[in-house]
Structure formats: structure tokens, C-alpha cells
Image (cartoon, protein in one colour):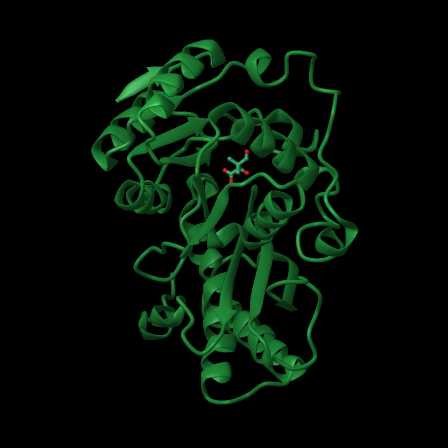
Length: 306
Ligand code: PAF
């Protein structure tokens, strides 16, 4: 695996490849890599000739009160993982490479409709920061395909919309969420959790699994599905002696518009965000006949009492 740390070296490597007409896949990351990133890289590996992975902790997508400084950074460990997953090029730019005129310049402004719900209200500048850095990476690398995880559903939807509206000519692929054996969605931020918080964090996937279960049984009214999800959330903390996370939202929205639905008719997504200790965690499940999240239903709901 080739490691490049500035955009001119990157351009040189990529120009050799474009001469060969290779299909380039990009997996943008902020490092702190886990098996969820592994599945993005191996999916890219199976569909592309060249797999480029970027690692850049993007300052402009963090609010001043958020965890930019403490975000997990382990370049050596990440390099080893990427080599074992089969990445060809690791791009680790300097801040000045992506922001030559500083951090307060040009931004991609996401449409209000797609940011008025879910994580938008709680993180007002976040998605503009994400779209801006992703656009820069797409412009530098010019991949044919870029891969993102379903766990960050709103992020994926916004990037897909940006690619369509700005005529970027790149295919945006959404890959299913990878989970711990007990259902917790993999996230770099899980590294912040101590054992009590780790137990509490299961409340997110338990409430989503309950919504999915009732959807599978035929329930379509959003109010009832959400009530079931809230009950499962409360139950989890009533039965387990762990701290109670601060629930930010539990919502049921249309996968395209991200607007709340009253009945689940077209494909919808049930999404949750909660603060567990110093980690802000998010998760979601797709409510659709062949949902990729169905395995969550067969994973153990065993109650662990500390
Ligand atoms: O999902 C992430 O890790 C980041 O938001 C991304 C897409 C790499 C942009 O910084």
C-alpha cells in the first residue's frame, strides 16, 4: 500500500492510473478504523481496480464544544488494517492541503429540507463541514465510486444529493452497518465508552430492533412504532443497572426526503441519537421488506445486569 501525504504526490500516483483507465474507488474516513471501515474497503476492493482511502480528521465538521481534539487517532494501527483489507493508496493530507486558504473559506451549503431533522438541529454546521471536505476529496481523487456507511444515514443521503445536484459524476454507494455481536453499531466513538456506558449504549440498537420487529409484524403507524421504540429504550434502562443516556432523538423518516412519516409506506428509516458519557452515538435501521438490518432481530436481547 502506498502512503501519500500531500496532494501533488497523490496527483502523480493517480495520473498514472487514469492513463490505464482503471476504476477508482474512494473510502473517505477520519481514521480510528474498525471493521465497519473494513467492510467499506473490501466492498470497494471487490468492485474497483484501485482503492484509495483517505484519513483526515476534518476540523470544520466539529463544533468548538465537540471532540475534534480527542477524536481517536492511530495512524500506525490504521495503516496496518488498511493494508490487510487490501487498500492500494492511503491519502493522509495535511490541513493546508485541503484548506489552502484557511478554515473559514468556502462551504457547501446543504439544503434545509435534508438538515432540518435528525442530527441537523443539534449540529448546525456539521453537514456543511462534511460536504465541503467530501467535495474537496472527490475533486482531488476523482473516483468513479465513493463508499459511505449506512450508520451515518443522513450524511450518506446528503452526499448522494450533492453528487446529483452538483453533477459530480461519481457513484455514491451506501454499505450496511457493521455491528458488535450484541447489536451495537461500530463507531470510532465507541472507544470513549467505559463498561457501564458500553452496556447503556446497547439501548440504541435495542430500541431500533424493537421498531424493526413491529414493522416486520405488519405495524405501519409511525406513532405506534416510535412508542414501541421508546418503551424498549425505557425497558433497557429499567432492567439494566447502567447509566441512562441522554436521548437526542428517536425518529422515523422517509429515506429520500428525511422528513418524518406518519405511516411507513415507502422505504423509511428509524434513526436514533443519544449521548452516552462523552460519546454522542447514532444508529438507524431501514424499514423495508428486505432491510439489510434484519439480522439485528436475531441477535441476543439478553438482559445483562451488572
Ligand atoms: O464519516 C466520516 O468519517 C466523515 O464524516 C467523512 C465522510 C470522512 C468526512 O470527514
